Length: 258
Ligand SMILES: [Zn+2]
Ligand SMILES: [Zn+2]
Image (cartoon, rainbow, N blue to C red):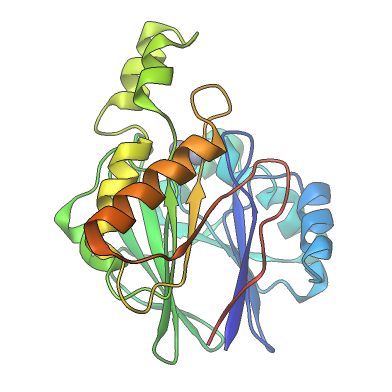
């Protein structure tokens, strides 16, 4: 058995905690150290027990708490080699370049496997988090879904997937043209429709919970993202997994995976 909790997700910070009775780790630490400690506490977790932070990519909304957590609590921070080099050069931040796409990494009893996704960073990875036949899959920043990425999400007990924007809201919204182009591009962020379409092909019998992540505050609404996924998944698969939009401001439900 293990548990996870989305501590928050969006362009101002992303972090997901995974834990069992022996280990606790984060995927990304995009909130300040103080805020990360506070949100861990809200989930009933103690930062002193934090074993590691696994970093998906170098964008600030995924790493802003890393340095202080390392310094204050001696937490290990693991990234891929390109992200390690980038963080070192730009922020003077030191990570262990341990993560290699498709190579399983062990955190206590967990097997965490990074896999590469398309996004405009030096290298961006999603993760599968597995323990004793159970699996949670996660990708919060990706411009489009490749067959390889889709395969990683198959047979998941729970899924955390980006559902960044409503295309119409983005197109009609206040963002400058270059930013709209970036977000809509193949290296940008997944729309509600792209996310729902991806979910249709990967949601299976085991899938009990889906968290929609990295929702744009300007170009999306939680109820729009949720409804679009629910309608498309039910119509196409007949399945009714619980679908919850992740919040930027509040921690999500604590999800138990058996
Ligand atoms: Zn990013
Ligand atoms: Zn991001």
